[in-house]
Length: 108
Image 1: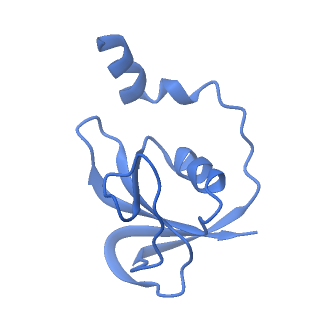
Image 2 (image 1 turned 30 degrees about the horizontal axis):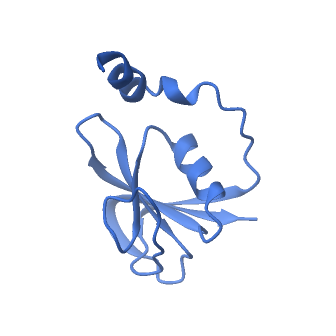
């Protein structure tokens, strides 16, 4: 079990990924998207898509693998393994100021 935890905590589980990104993302500092939620599994909350990711590249990969995802918000919160919590969104129409958060809007 310790080996699995080490692979997860270090992000080594991502190294065999050959995924290439299909879209560009616009980075908006100190912002968030209230609403515009969709459900996904295994979300930390049942009515939204809130996942933990190791890196920005993993967040992009998750967004591109979810059909409804058009934006995601990196929070300033992390799990006990050091993964950052990210909200995945259906859009960014309600962009608002949120200190310490970064929104990435999918372009393409």
